[in-house]
Image 1 (cartoon, rainbow, N blue to C red):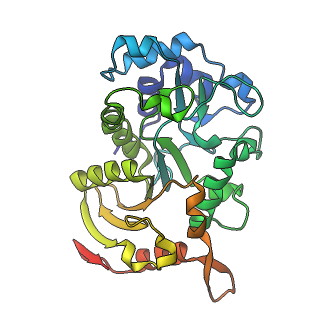
Image 2 (cartoon, rainbow, N blue to C red; image 1 turned 45 degrees about the horizontal axis):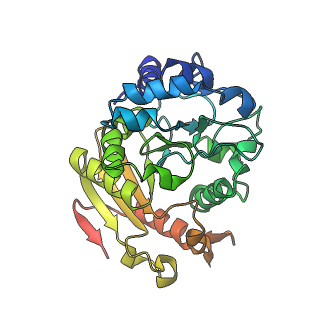
Image 3 (cartoon, rainbow, N blue to C red; image 1 turned 90 degrees about the vertical axis):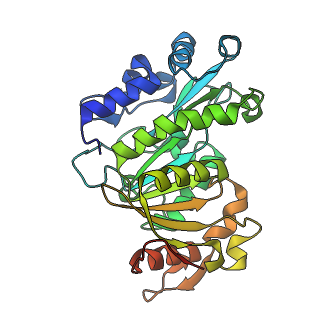
Length: 312
């Protein structure tokens, strides 16, 4: 596993370019710069275009030149310590950037921090709820790992690193990306290096993958690089929790070189269809209401594991 600050900065520079990286990152502290979106996200479109060319994504030159492109920069709170067992305990992976022409404040963006996970000022996280999907995602994550009812609790936020399977996409509506032939293959090809390297740097205890495409990629990656120890299949959860989504939720524990990794397979956390995932189902000894998902994860973590055993 990589445990070097210099290697991580080099990783970011490879995928985002020198100017984008230096615009968003305090290189000495390896933290995301504080400040306003209008200052941090005003990145020259020519720099963005050049970076898409540099990525060797097998997208035709015509498609690259005839579209506006945008980047989702990974989000985290505080400084990164690569000497720790887990640089960040929780790695959340989405699909790709969804950056419109202007944000809620009327600011034109070509880049942003994924789901707004950054400090805008000391202990202020205004970007976390800038959009409705942001609020949904952080509330839902809080339903699994939250310390209290406030998803802006720093202790909770500092556990998380969030990024996308494909960190770049056509700027504008989501559907515009899928007009590109073989976009799914391009996204997966990007993830094969970008996400693999991200896992090496972040050394997570948990990986939460949002949506089937991300889940399948993570599952294949972990299956090829680690040993499956145990699984809770969707059948272990109540029908209300599963709803119509047969493949969700799912927990798998893998043994890797660094430590065990629990892969949590979920539908898109920023989607309204996951609301029922976080309803309180039981009450613990302290009389605190907990979601069924949170209770099952605790049960899964504390259970003795047997290689390749599946619990149904």
